[in-house]
Length: 292
Image 1 (cartoon, helix red, strand yellow):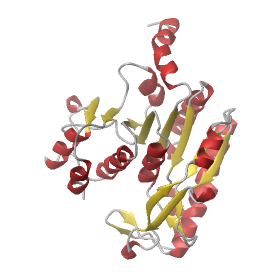
Image 2 (tube, rainbow, N blue to C red):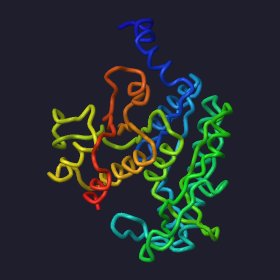
Image 3 (cartoon, rainbow, N blue to C red):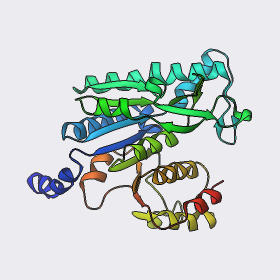
């Protein structure tokens, strides 16, 4: 297919997303590898230029670990979540908001775009309560205030959000980035929520490439989890998508952020590139119990 034919084929998708909100959760190797990072940010800037309201939400586990190591504070994990005392929460905010966030803003500007970096404590965007005493200052999201995001999205700038949270007393909490991004997508009624990861998407029988799922639903995922086909770090990501679907989202995509232009291929081609997950008639509470 030559260039004019390619653009013509992509036109219906361009029109579909124009003026709509697309929330992208960004992290993993796609953030730490500079070549991949520039490719991802270039794609995001292209989407914004085309009139799509892109909201970029990021984590930064490696940067937090590096910051804690610098101050001789060991990282401790309980059930896959980082134990966070008050000092750790403040250092995590410094790493996410002061280092990772501003680095992304700078890189978008270097590519010729505009971006405004904010964190979940700005405008009390991400309100939380303590998840458990055992984990310390790790927050459970209670409310997403989208006003500041919507204001930025109406401008030429891309909102770049670091996922920290704040409680009723103004204390800072560490927040899971996948969960925060999914809740933001749900509250914004996003046309598409894309969760960039380090794998191609979902498989019915990983790592068998022939079992790759181009499209699936929560009910199918329930069956795969029950059969032990999905486990480990993928389950929290699926839980994040589930939460978003409880808050208004109808579709989400798991996408390999390591592949060049995977965002463009996913949004503007019939075949897509990652795994499209659709909401169905599954009892979401049952899914929630199954993944605990």
